Image: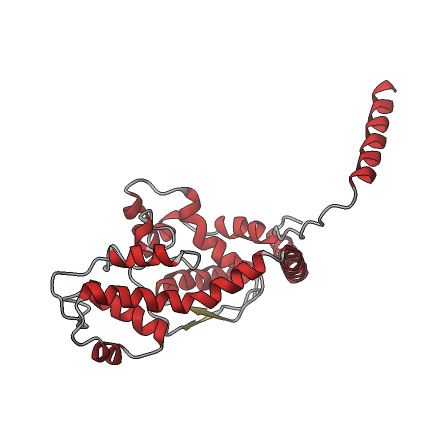
Length: 274
């Protein structure tokens, strides 16, 4: 009896405190269906299948240690993100082709066991080329690269971008030529320059006649800075408008929840959770 009275009193004080503190920001709806479907799909896949994926091999080799379970299972979460909304077409880059094959295999495996439920999505290969690392032109540029000098971020300052391009790996030949096999570092500079200017690589090479590679790297840095400038301005503008960002987040989360919840519930019924 005394315990119940204490709980009531505690509840009254919590209510009074809430009134004095005023309204708080309404949290965005949490879309937990992604992790729920991820767990169900994880139970349907064999570990060797995931260890066969190219990115798992690359990441574990880069880390020079045993990979984590999260890294191993991440492609299954990607699959859940796609299948949860019953996507039929998914644009992917070359480095995600294997992951899309996994998504397709999981959809087929689920349908074979529980009936035709998920559409098997078709991958649409995007023409976007890989940007190579500034420190290792044999590898792609990656935000997870432990060497921060290898990657250009949208939020990098102009000074940081210039510094990274100054230290970018090229070679000891001063002429600017495109030869991805023989001169991967310089060729990477040309590919980046062409991408941010909209020019072809051949046109960039023609415009760079007579410029040595040291000076050319600075030209590429300037072109990247110019390309990123309006994006950075928009980011700063959005960061100053937190109310707007919260509204977008809440609206997006609510819409995702609306779409994801019935699909996840049906999956749980099919597998016997409900």
